[in-house]
Image 1: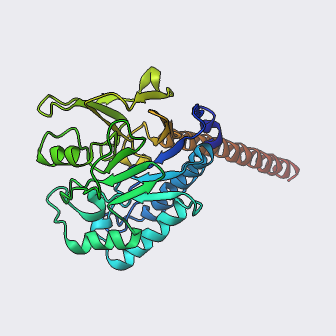
Image 2: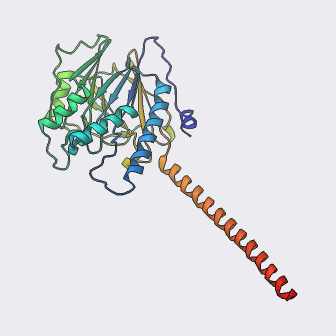
Image 3: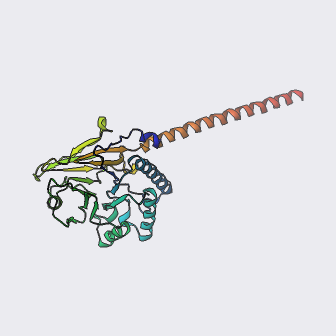
Length: 330
């Protein structure tokens, strides 16, 4: 099923001969052990982890990425986990998202990793635990690409070591954030845009595939538009990074079926010269799979029940015939 689904994915050819492939993973939210103590939680953990591992294997083979940013909410209960629980979640995470060491991996914390949503307090201990276990930095470089982490939760502003390169420079600047940067018109957004002048912003958190194009007029109304939806579900989108005085934010959908979204998958971006090519690699609808499994089990149960009834009926008939023969002889 997973291999068949991968046949629907688009390949993005490199026109310039020198492209960078980026695989984006958002909100896997590995199931924890604190909030759900029901007897079926181990089954749910097993099924969710197995699903994530299989889908990730397929997108990894399809994209052969140079860089994999994880856009936050890696764990569902990371911010409330004990150290032992956190270590357990970490082992599961690395087992699911295991890759070759040559691939650059970037880990951005989300509110479920360090707190910050629904009044949950963000503490230095939670932040340091995430940063030490995932060996995070504030900036990352890959050839002519620079990635900056902008954390709306902690209000940390990325500080470039040098001023942003001029427009004609081949340098390309990316901002990675768990929560949307352009959707909220506030001081944090303004400072990040002024300090970094990003060509592209990648975010998660919304669990859906959306994008925002915003001009330098920061007070204008911001609207997020669907991306790779409906008839354009498998489309490869092209964004010109030379477009002046505008910022682009791409919101990557969740890759976990546990988030209640039917449309889940991974973002796939290819930087080809001055163009960013982007599509979503949609995953198998797990709920439909589970429903079909349920129907299959129900049909099997009905067939077995009918077979059992039929067999019992034959046995009972034969016994009755033998009793009649015996009674007749007597």
